[in-house]
Image (cartoon, rainbow, N blue to C red; front, side):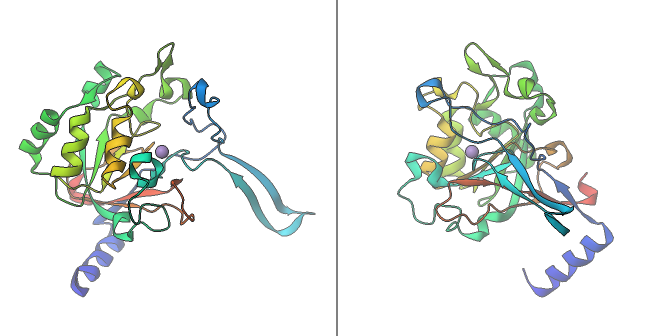
Length: 265
Ligand code: MN
């Protein structure tokens, strides 16, 4: 990008010709989180909480601030390759060492709303992606792929997690699709509206949790619990998603934004 491109972007931001869409959910004590299975102690990931230090009172008359606490994988969050055992030996694979170029990049949005409503266990196939590409063009190298399901519109935690006696039920990926996106399209990673990047039933897939296993194994990233994907065009938006710079962090909550041309909505 040269100086003229940046000047044009600045003008477009000021005029509203480029709009900013917030793809993040609000972090609160009610934000749904993944709970690990019983054999792993039902998970030790802390839900989000905050504790008031002071609020213009005797504890601090002029200032308001909180202590906050949560697991790295809480709410709208970033998965770094180091999150999964398959990604543990890569270089520059943690929140503090990932190349920052990953954090500002084009994104494509694949619409699987109807399929996800018809079948909460829908798995996106390579053919499904290729059908999308036949309409919108090949997914560019170095893009984020966002999986639009409208799952974020499920308001209660129980509807969002959609758990029954078999575990969670939410859409995910056919393993071949993850390999296709990582290897043949060389994407940065995938983003989903669900609590994690994999299907609710992914522990029964081969390999288990294929998006985590194969995407992080390929040194790619993930974003989970995204919202407002219905406000994005299929192509042409720019995604901004930067995790906190936690030393050797496996991920972090983050504010995810998209730049969208006003004529693209
Ligand atoms: Mn995660």
